[in-house]
Image (cartoon, rainbow, N blue to C red):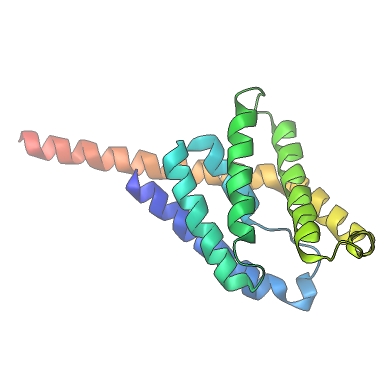
Length: 178
């Protein structure tokens, strides 16, 4: 299980580096959403609380360090997304693609709203929100369209890794019997 957690830490670290360097280029500005959100949703759907929260906290801390924004903002957003999805998964069918699409879109929209609340002065919040409406809606729709595919890719990655690990454990067991 530790190898699986390390794998997701590496995937998350790669994602953080990519979105703080490559996706900040003017060519991609305003199109891509925070690609760690689907990873956080995946971790909350597929991991126990302690292990999932550990990965989420580490990734949030790294994102806070590399983003240059308000320290602790990403960490708290990812933490609350993790807990919210855990709670929702008790009451809703989270395996449905449409639900996952809406869920990831809502998480991206919520993240933008929290950014607006935490960054803007109270008297300028409405102006900032009005100026950012089009990019936020574009990113929310893009997240809703691509999020379930990212979750599917992460699920396949986990299945492959677990298959390899169980095969390696069987081989070790067979060689110990001989």
